[in-house]
Each structure stands twice: as C-alpha cells, then as structure tokens.
Image (cartoon, rainbow, N blue to C red; front, side):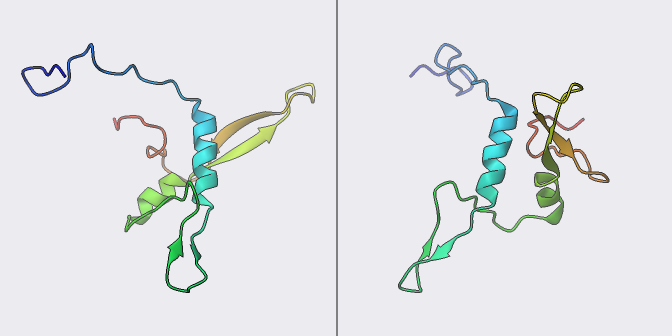
Length: 104
C-alpha cells in the first residue's frame, strides 16, 4: 500500500464514502437496541442475538441523546400515503450521537 508522508493512506486507495438512508439506519439501530441477551441452557453462558448492541458504562446524557428521537407516521394533507419522519422529544437536547454532526 502506498502511504503518504504523514502515515495516512494515499487518497487513491481510500474507499469512497457510502450513502446511507439515515431513517432506515436509525430504525435498524433502534430495533437492535430492543434486543436482550439470553442465558443459555447451562445457566452460565450469555447468548447475544445477532445485532445486539453492547453498551458499556456510559453516562446518562449519552443514552438520553441516543434515545431522544421517535418514528412518527402521518398521512399527507389528503389523507393518503403515510409518511414517516423522526421526531425529537420535547425538552431534549439535539441528539448528536446518531446525527453524525460536528458540535458547533
């Protein structure tokens, strides 16, 4: 591999960023947050389902921001075509944990 003077990969070798549907990614992540670990038949081993989210010791503010949004389904003005969007709860700071935005 070709490396630059500062030890980073050459820009020709970097993979282009992938476009991700933000709403779908949030929905998948929230569904994975609901999964719980089970204890196996031997009552010793913990079995984690596929997609289980391991949250180590994290402060409460991070978890509050992580769970601040909820998926709302509404119909358009004519009563057709349900459209969904993510809505932040009232009294909650702007969740920066899932938005991938830089703090200002």
